[in-house]
Structure formats: C-alpha cells, structure tokens
Length: 622
Image 1 (cartoon, helix red, strand yellow):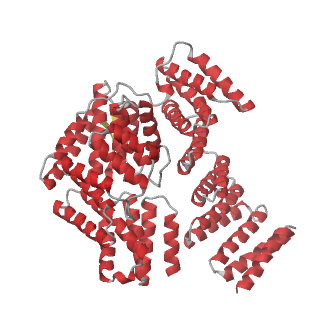
Image 2: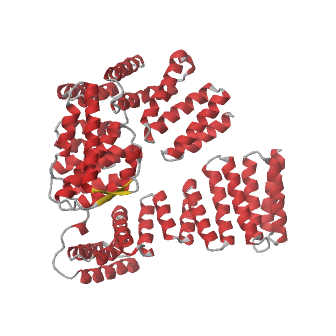
Image 3: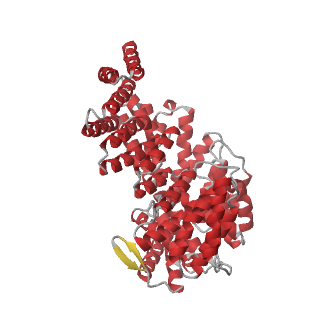
C-alpha cells in the first residue's frame, strides 16, 4: 500500500498543475488514509494543498492545511524538520488566500496573520515573510501609510528560511513599488528576474505581468510588448492565472490593442465559469469591461462575444462584467469597513489609454511605401538563401514583416495571412521562436476564419515554433488538428528521446487514432506498442498500462497475425519487461516465452536471445 501511494504521488509530481494532477493526489490521500500510514497521510495532504494552490482551487487549501496543522499541534514530535518547514511555508498561502474571499471575516484573516507570525517567531524569529504579508494586507485595506511602513520593514529585515525564493520575493516587492506609484524603482528592481538572472518555476512570468503597466507608464514600450507576449503565452488557459489574464486584457485596452484583447477575451472567457476566487474574478472582469468599453469607443460595439453558447453583444457583456466587478468590490468593502475596493474598481473601469497604439510586432506597425508583393518575393528569396547557404535570416524577416504590414494596410487580409506563414518560417530560421509562434498563430486564425482551414504549412510552422518553445502540449494539439500521423510519430519519437514520457504517450496515441481512421491497423499497432511503453515510463497506473498493451494487441491482431507477426513478438517482449518490473513474474515469463518462440520462428535469433535473457532474469529474480 505504501509503495502504491508513493508511486501515485511521484506520478502526480511529474504532471502539470491542474485537475488531472489534483485528482491523482486526492486518490493518493484516500489510499494513504485507508492504510493508516501517518507519514504518508501528511505527505499526501501537503502535496494536495500544493495542487489546490497552483491548480486554481485555493479555497480547498484551507481544510487540507488545517488538518495538517491540527495534526502537528497534537503530535509535533512526529513531524521531522523539513516536513514542519513545508507546513509553515504553506501558512503563507493560507494568509494570502484569505484576503481573496470577502466571505471570510476580516478579523479571522488578521488573526491568521498574527498566528503565522507567532509560529514563525517560534521557529527561529523568522519574520521576513510576515512583514511581506502585512504589507499586502495593508494594501488590501487601503492603508497606504501602513503599507509603506511594512514595506520598509520587509526591505530591511534579513531573509530567512521561510522567505519566498529570491525571484518571487523580488516580484512581490516590484508589485508593492508599483502600487505605491514608484514605477521607475519597480522597473529597476525587476531587472534581474526579467533578464533571467533570478528565476524559479513561476518566474519570470509573474514578474513580467507585474511590471507590464509600469513599463508602459515609463515609456518602455518595446519592453512592455515583449513582456506581454512572453507572459501571456505561459499563463493562457490556466484557471489559476485568471487575475493575470485580466491584467493582460487591461494592457491591451490601454495600448490600442483592442483586437488582440478581444481574441484573448474570447479564448479565456470560459475560465470565468469557475473562478479560483472572487478577487481573481473581479480583476478579470475589470480588465474585460475596460477592453469592451474601448471596443465600443473605437466603433466596434456591434461585435459579439461567444459565451455559454450564445453570441453576446459587446455592450451587454461590458455591462455584465462591470456589474460583476462592482458587486465583488462592494462585498470586500462590506467586509473591510471602507470603500477602498469600490474606488479602485471605478478607477480601473474609467481608465484612459496610456498610448494611442503600441505595436506588438514589427509587422503590426504602418508600412512604408512600396509593393508588399515585392517585399514578399524578396523575403521568400532571402529565406531560401538563408536555408540553403546558412545565411542570416534577418533580411528575410525584415522584408516579410514589411510585406505583412503592407498587405494589412491595403486591407488584403488573405495576402497578410499567407505572408505571415513565411514570416513565421523566417523568425524560426532567425532563432526567434516566440515571434514565430505568435505570427504563425495569427496566420492560422486568419486562414481558418477565411477558408475554414489553414494550409498544412501554417500548422507545421506553428508546431515547429511550439516545439522550439518547449510547448509540447500545444504542439500536440496543433499536430492533431493537422491530421498527419507521420508528424505525430516524429514528435512522439523526439519526446521519447527526451524522456518526456507523458507527451510521448499522448503523441503516439494520437498517431494511432489517425492510422486506425485511415485503416492502417499495422501502423496503428506499432504506434500503440510505443504508446504502452511510454505510459509505463510516465507513471505507475497499472490498469492504464495493461489497457494500453491490450489495445495495441487488438490492433495488431486485427491487422492479421501473420502480417503482424514481428510486431506481436515485440509487443510480447515489451509487455513482459514491464510486468517484470511490476513483479508479475508468471505472466511476464509467459509473454517472454511467447516472444522468444515468435522471434525464433521469424529467424531473428538476436531478438530471440534477448527474450531468453529476460526469461533467465525472471528465473534469477524468482
């Protein structure tokens, strides 16, 4: 039982934060509790609190943390130093989360902060993080003087074992500086994290969002554009970052990027159905309402946004977003006994553009005079030359960016979309993967909208850019849409070589689906065999592994036992090896014998000997 729980926790730890990871940790906790193993129960609870915190369900952290805290208080001697440290670390999440829910009484929130300080002092007079939380609490209550005082204490107290990592601590300080109107200081403080000299799992993306508007307000427009593009790609589609997405909507509204903002809003609006907290919900609604107001002011109030199966007119959706934001702010004000949040909301809803137009890409700017067709032709020629002679792709980028801008200025949407495909290829050749991905996405969106489906070249370029950025899940989704099983097999093989087993399993399965749809059951069976082994390496879900091997066997059998004889022999060998590691020795030996006999019948003595080696290993293990 203990080994099964530990395996589930290891499997969950390799997964991205989100519902799938959370469900797996919940399952591990139930198993640990059934086995009555105190240490495993504590470990699973700590991991579950983390899954809730970063998976967009902060309200669930309270109960999980409270159970661990009560357990610690009852028997502190059963907790070792590092597990105790982790429990105290999670206290910071609880205090921060309590501010996000107006249903939680203010007194209870302040008492929790006092209790955090008491325990941190008891652990070794570690107050650095306590000062940070008091600074944020003062800001939440609209106490500017208190915020300055606690910020000073935070800055001047030494870091300790319970301080946030240096990158996150710096990001929090930059937020405080910006909130106090010290934009230049905020930008200067952000530099080490933005430049990658100080990073962690959530940095620099959190910092880029924090410094986004300070960049615009201080005239650092190119840095602002880059920060928006880098950070949004990381947080998009993630419920736990609903507030950050709201900031990106606000940025688009204030910089003349209403069209991009509308695309983001349409993509992310479903996240509002399950907001992580009222605070995050309000920030998103404020950004959305501001953006929608700007669309109306710029003559686009006739547009609609798809929500809950209905095309909602922009003015109607704006009114709903404004009402939602005002309602939540009123709830916070009722809780806190002042009007701080309502005033902040009105200020954000009424904000005016900071700049008339901030181009996010070179091809978004106005073009020079000249023919975009000529620019396009020269750009493609320069790109071909760069590919064949290992030349700099810079000239190709410049010509193709000019072509896109020229087509756009002339209202030639089709020409601008197709030129973007080549521009994305040029960006890739120049080593600018982020620019390539963003440009290819624009091209695919425009071409899908015009013709119902983008050319394969556009999706291939997008997939290559996503791969270069390490966005493997998005690459898989793009290749699924492309419908090319060979491309999916190439991706899966690459992921397999990188030990990215979860992504490899997904790509092999997607390729198998396409092979099956095309009637190529032999190719499907080969892909499913590789899928099964990847599922094994990705985790310890024995039922899932067995089902994967069963599906592969069914496909190969359907292809014809004689035609698929070698593939069936390989499948038997691979499954036997997996079962050996699962201590299922009898079934493993049966399959190893099957593989040895099959390879011998095929005249393949090398592989037959490998199968016999496996049989001997099973005998030694026995």
